[in-house]
Length: 409
Image 1 (cartoon, rainbow, N blue to C red):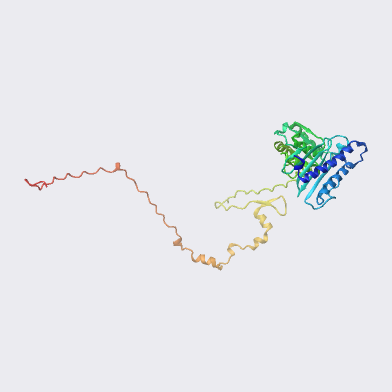
Image 2 (tube, helix red, strand yellow):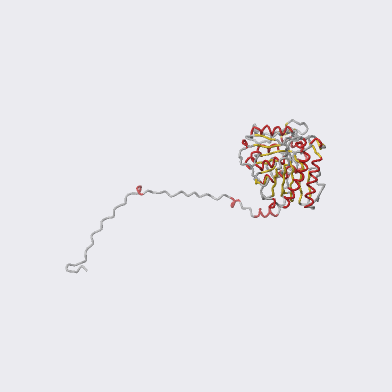
């Protein structure tokens, strides 16, 4: 894509990236004079980081003074604090490589509008490689359109990653990932600059990339370049919420799905690193009472079944007593309040509903069962079983009344 066809905001981002790259290239000529300070164990910063970041911010503020900034070194201290446009800046991604003279570092600049990355630039000053993308308009490397690779199998893929190096990172967790992933792919690489790793996925040089412990400025620009090149990017569970999750997967569509299957058990969302809570011992299950068979009386036939379900005695835990004794011991006042059936008064006033039901109660004669009349099915008689019919006597020939000589008509 020609420079004239670029989005105006993307043009400003490219201008700022090249200004920062010039500062980095000049400093790389004499690394011995660098002043290196440590933000933490294995986390370094030089005056080159600070000078490059300030050059980027100054270039952008001249064109867009109302925009906000989220930068690695200065945070949100510069620019508008509540603007919908936020420039996410990493002035030197791969500082450790830079101070050792290892030529694998880059400038990363992204513009987010309402939380969505719209413009992206990643500039490699040591090789003069410029990756850039505008949302919806494709990804480019030095004016040449780039696409992700066409590999379909993880076993054939070259995967980039980044090893943990800060204090507090879970090294054992990462070793488990490598133990499972290294035999499943064609190779694993760790150059040391996440912004360039994402661009390598977009250019088809890698088939996939994953890393944990990353910040938004490490992956914001590279994420748009990957998606505009036809790749997929997300967290370890495959969701699109990756910018602030400190974990990322980027790959071709087919390889992405296979990487998610391997890496999803190691996501920080699941919190697998936390120690498991001690499991409380389960309370002993209550023993279900069993009813005994009813005992028959010695005389007088079969007696009514007695309630012989046993319960624990209230005064002696663990001792079982018949249910009747248990109820008598625990609820004596309830049994005393209930009158017996023989002590109920005879003339009990009926409620209106009961009186109405009694008025329409059928008499004994009406309530008597109606005799059932059983009708037998008619017997079918076959024709062969019928007695033979008597033949009727032959009739006497009728006497003709025609006389001789009469006409027949």
